[in-house]
Amino acid sequence: MNFGAMFGKVLMSNGLITAFVIIAITNLIAYKLAGLSKGRIHGSAVAILFGLVLAYIGGGSKGIATIPLFAGIGMMGGAMFRDFAIVSTAFGADLREIKKVGIVGVLSLVFGLITSWIAGVVVAFALGYRSSVDLVTIGAGVATFVVGPVTGAALGASSEVIAISIAAGVVKSLAVMIFTPFVAKPLGINNPQSAMVFGGLAGTTSGTAAGMAAVDPKLVPYAAMTATFYTGSGCLTFPSIFYFLTRAIFG
Amino acid sequence: MVIYGVGLLAFCYLTGMYIGDVLGALLGVKANIGGVGFAMLFLILLSNKGIDAGWLDKKSQEGIAFWAAMYIPIVVAMSSIQNVAAAVSGGIVAFLGGLLGSALAFLLIPVLSSFAKK
Figure 1 (spheres, chains in turn red, brown):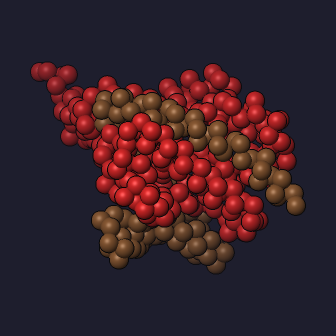
Figure 2 (cartoon, rainbow over the protein chains, first blue to last red):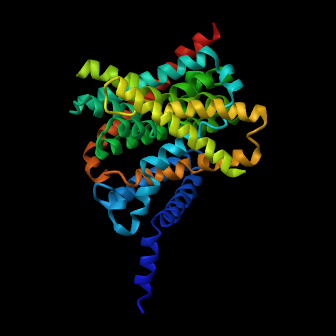
Figure 3 (cartoon, rainbow over the protein chains, first blue to last red):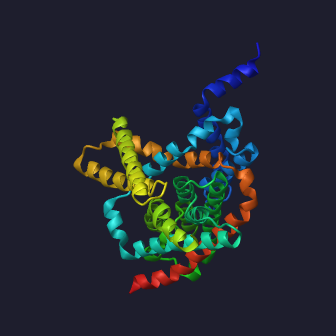
C-alpha cells in the first residue's frame, strides 16, 4: 500500500477543506512572526505577503492553485467567498456611530479615496500602464488590498494587474503601520478628532489600528471608526465613479 | 439560529450583486458596478434594524460574525492564487503607488484636522 499517495488523494478530493488547513497554518506563522514586532506590524499584512509568496511559488497564472494538490485554495480565495466575507465585515457598523462621524469623517473618507486614486493612477501611468481598467484597478489597490481585487474583478482586469493592486495595498498598509508612530506628533494626531481624520484618510483598517496602537491605544477606536467605512465606500466608488473618471481622462 | 444570520448575509449579498449587474447594464459597461458596496449598505441597514427590533438575536448574529472573522484568511487565500509570477515585473508600481498613497494621506491629516477645529 502506498500511504503517501492515499494521503494525497484525501487532500485532493477535499480541496476546500485542505485549503482551510493550509491557510490556517500560513496565518499562524504570519501572526507569530508579526508578534515579534510587539504590535508594530499587524499579522494580517504579513499573512497577505505570505499569500503573495505562495502564489509566486505556485508560479502559474492561478498562483498556488496551479498545483493540483492546492487547487482548493482557488475556491476559498475565489470571487464568491471573497465578496461574501467582505460584505459580512459591514456587520457591526453601528448606525449611531456613523452619525457621530460627521462631516469631517465623511470629508476625510472622500479625500482618502481621491488621493489613493491619484497616487495609483499617476504611478501606473508613469510606468507604462494605459488602459483605464488597469489604471483604476491599481488606484483601487492603493486604497486597500481589498478594494483593488474587487474593482479589478468587477471590471475584468487581468490577474497580473490584480496581483499588483493587492501588493500596492499591502505596501500602503505596512507603510502606515511603520511610519504612523514617527509622524503622529508632527502631524498632530493626538485627539479623537484627528484620529478620525487619520482613519478616514489612511483607510487601511489593519494599518491604522496597528499604527495608532503604537501611538496611543485609547485613540484606536476613533481611527478605526472611519477606517471601517473606507473599504465599503471604496468598493462602491472605484468600479463606478472612479472608473468613469479614469475612462473620461484616459479614454 | 446561526443559519438565520448566514441567510440574511446571503440575501444582502445577492441583492447587492443584482443591483451592481443591473447598474452596469444600464450604464452600458460589462461590469458589476459597486455590487459589494450595495450589499454592505443593505447589511448595515438590515442588521441594525434586526438588532433593534429583536429578530436578529445573538445566535443569528454569530452566523454573520463568523464570516467577518474569516475575512482576512480568505483575503490571504485570494492573494495566494494571483498571477504573482507575471506581476513581479510590475512590483515597482505596487511599491511606489503604495508609498505615494500613504504619503498623500499623511500630508492631508493636518489640513483636515484644522478644518475640524473650526
